[in-house]
Image 1: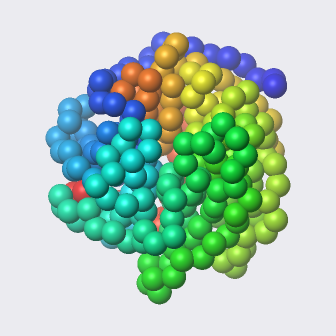
Image 2: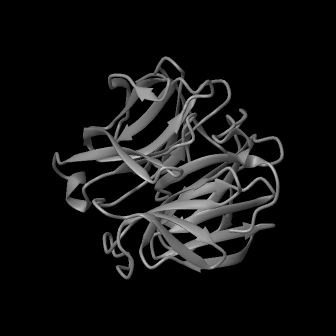
Length: 292
């Protein structure tokens, strides 16, 4: 794999020691939410923990809806997570964690909204799927109709996912075979899956910049890999031994800061990205003040 390797001297840890951190989400009002697999959704304000909500399971991914509400994907009882709540997709309502869909799901991992307003999410089979091929699934959930649609059931530990800035491609990290795949998207339908790029080890969460570059967390490499829209490796952002980055998002007033959950340290890291994040769907979800 080509591309330059960079250790970023400006990286700073906002918090540390909070378990297996995951799912950073910029809330658009100067605050950042993220998850801990130990069973919490945590909100930071001014670099300090200002709120913790226990979910009853193992929350991983977060996404923000059109009204500012926060949705989460979580497993149940895996990787040492709590098992009081079943695996599924949930919505935060203050300190309440409200089930959205749980029936028929195994271990939802990450989620994002699509151009059609549906909530897209990955659902690997569980812990064993990291070690051997066990097909996981990609779903879309229509919040208006309450309809769950299976989009693909042949992915090997599907993990992070994101749409490109134009809303014409869906990227999904396939952890077990160490690659990222992409699907063309048009008129509410996905086209055939194809390989986008490979990673030197199993990848995890991802974010997309407004220039179309794809930023992929590769935990065993302790790095975030930056790929061109064509799938070429442009840069490796090394975050330090034992950081084990699990997911990332763009944030800050100009969306030019990168927030990375460094699960190996139980931390959230902040660095200047040198790029601006693409606006997430729904497009206005970054605007206004929300209180998850």
